[in-house]
Image (cartoon, rainbow, N blue to C red):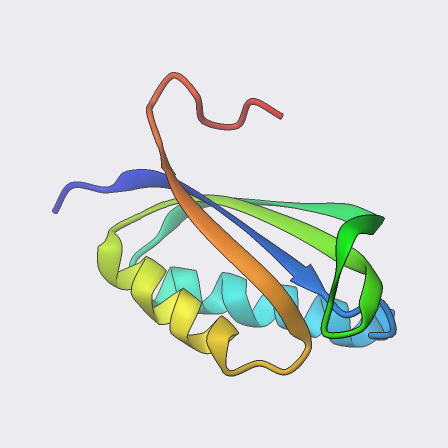
Length: 103
């Protein structure tokens, strides 16, 4: 099975605790590994001001995940994020091989 490179960025509510943040990161990392993903690279981008409010929040905690996987991994990951009340927004993009891990 061919694996593609993906980047997922999600924004957490600003009032979430550091422990809860780390638990979510580990949960999503475990989910990617269980579904056959590889080379998982996670960066905490920190708290940033949003250009517009999302559900009455003006700040958010950004987390970026780069990994190799297939479409099923992305689908499972986004379904899990969709039903998590601590996540304000998420976005996954498929990267070309020459774009990966350029941050």
